[in-house]
Length: 263
Image (cartoon, rainbow, N blue to C red):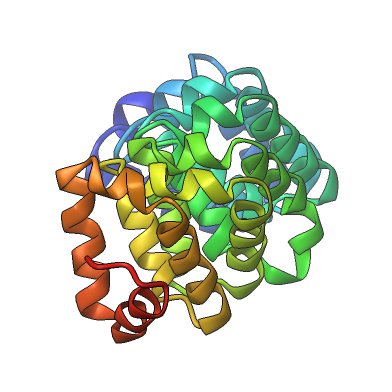
């Protein structure tokens, strides 16, 4: 009755405690693994209660040969798991508890389908986890993800779920990641900034960017708006957004006056 027990709140807690008690007994651990593999373990991965059991297993059991069955299932069914409400939590734990090879495999799987993952209502939380909670000493491991985001930064800034990832980079002042994204916008998409600002999701990204702890970037963003002021005049909603920025940042009004622009 293991699966039935795992999928209930109290039952999951019992099995988690059970794992703590038997982790030094290979015979019992292997018996548990055998039972878990008897059915589709993905049911437990994606369960609101069962996922905690898998996370507990990864936290307690460190021998690769005993955790391989979890990682192998995760690799084979990656998209299905990452796009589920509770499965994505298992992948986060797999990243934080995995060894070098296991982490690399997960990062590679993310890169293969980054567009789908970062735009998914649950998958985007994996990218947020990587940006804000992943071990900062492993920054080089996640660098390829940042580089791939930069390649499609305008698209990601204007999508509902991916924009929230970018927005939080500035909201939380993640200096290293934030500066890489800002530099990409300014260097390669200077004239697209006004279109991002005019988007229903992108405007929040730019607003948060204005709060980023670097006045130099703020000045450049203001210049990007001013250089495309004609587009602002043509869009009433965009005018309201720019007016809000003008009220919040007096230096923007000064810059407009210096350029002889009435707004």
